[in-house]
Image 1: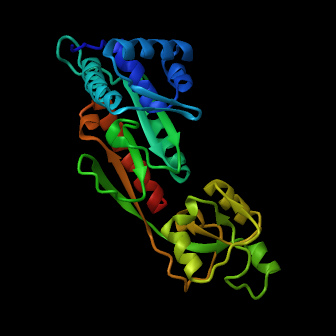
Image 2: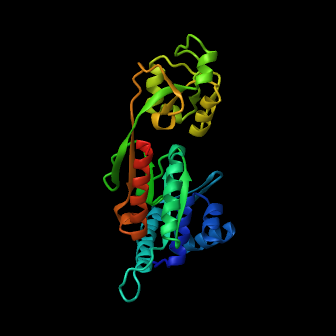
Image 3: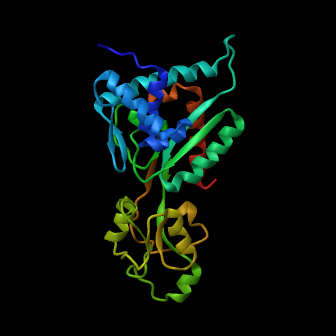
Length: 288
């Protein structure tokens, strides 16, 4: 027997899909985690099949749960569209939330875009998921993602932003203390999975050896170089106050893409933020 899930049920499932746990889904919706769990259990009982797999480190959707999330995304799109236009058909102030997934290196750009966006549209909000993983935008985990690889999903829109040039850089004081610098000298490396970036693999292939300090943060890596603790592979746009070394090493550029779903970009507030973030990223890549 078919069962029509109401919007309250769907928004619970959508929140769990986006946050990966009952606790965080409850925080997003402003209700207790126990309430989220209880109501989803009731929905599962009514449907006669599981929607969410529970685990120690969180939860994830079953195939049936994911199919309902697709329904929830469509319902959410319809509700958001209703907030964009007034009853008279005139354009009203934008409202709604935008969920963005980006690596740490792009967090400042997303925050700058969020500041501009919410200043222009105070009824809107932006949520930033800082992660080294590529969230499944195709499944609605995020509305917009900043990526450094084209994964070729046919259902997603990829907007190529630019290429970020890289080099190996050091602080002037470090160079004074380290005469005869060679690629085997202290390299402030990045920990997995960041060490698999093409720039890091190329530097390693060129002889740049891992030093005594490794970090899992681009911000910490840049700070360590500025403290004179070693050399590192850095974006040129962030290293303008440092000195380039080993210029002969062939460090490849990094491609930057903005990624979203066509359905998401049909929502006026998400499309607007997409355009603002694109402009901010272009400014950041060019150093402007």
